[in-house]
Image (cartoon, rainbow, N blue to C red; front, top):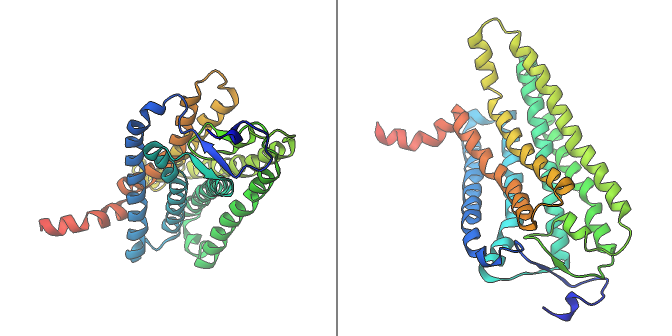
Length: 315
């Protein structure tokens, strides 16, 4: 390590990413499941985008939002994995200061967009089930575009102060980040100044993004469940519930790992550092893998379109 890692400095030119502290000897082996996960995420989400684009019957609000979710998954996984694999395979640990802030920004902003997309999908399911006669008139293409733009702008604007605040901090302790990527909390811990403004802003953003999104999703599904249970027959209830089953699975796959990671950061002071790093990486990657699989398996239109080349061969 160079002396700049331990001497005083205010604006380091580079940071050093340690990967998974304590498991450096196993980095090559750990890279195998992560590389597999990344490959599945890339293939699965591009497949979703390709099928929705090629199939006119899927040009509906639900599938447009699904495409937005696929794009956020692609960007999130690509923001993390290439640098992680360069650490695991080539021991290339350095990352430029500006590149570090850019990576942090992309991860946070697209995580916010992912949460907003899940909320928009819940609204789509609410209108489709609770007011089906107005679904096609309520969610027209101009309305869809406005919702999508609002989700994107919220993620872009709310997260924008993070890198600007981080750029102003003095880093006089070290430039070593015990992580596989430039995680915001790990970066905050390196600053040797008052970071209360950043802490308050982070809490405000967490409330405005995650808490409100979860609240509106919960309200939407409360109304959806009330509408489902008011249906006269069991078959009608099961069929209607099946139309939002995929979205419920995706919500659980996205928010449960995130909640578990947040609780680990807040209360898991005795948890080993390498376990914490692994959990954070997994919670960012798991939704990117599961989302296309869940929709591919549970959505008949996507499943039929995906199996079409094989069924044609068999006939």
